[in-house]
Amino acid sequence: MAAKEEMTLWTGYFDSRISRSDGRRVPKEASIPKPTLESVVWAARSAGIRKMRQEPEASHPSRPFAKEGRLIMPPKHVFEVTGASSKEGVMKAIGTALRKRSEDAKEQGKDVTRGPAKGDRRRRAQRKSFKHRKSGQRKKKFGRK
Image (cartoon, rainbow, N blue to C red; front, side, top):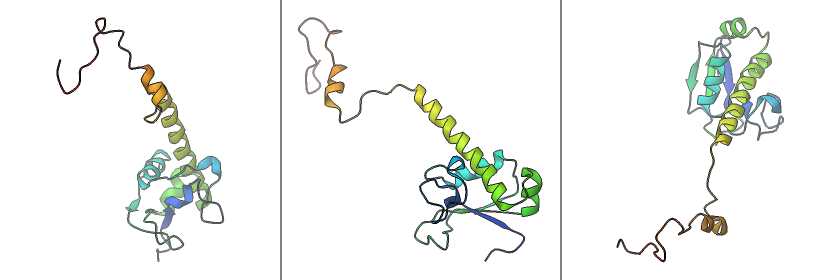
């Protein structure tokens, strides 16, 4: 059991796939699907929190099968830095930073153009044209040129 001078944040608190009754403690707008301990640590740092301890192999008592990990930090420092007056306010600040980072990463990912999906044969065939080769010449098999 954690001491009274510690605040514990589990990654499940920020998981948008978990319902409020199953353990999510922030609103959907401040949560992401499958948050990692590293991403929660990054969000806590961006919220201004510097003093924290990570326990990556810890599992929440209500979810003993999942080794989700947790953050342990001193409440005095956390309340002072974030300006929140409760644990809920701290979690919301961290969750908002987490969600913003996730959305920024999605936006950057949209810029990259990808080819057709692996199983989409028709679209994949479209890009395999022989127009750039000499007339009547196709790629020969088995390594011959």
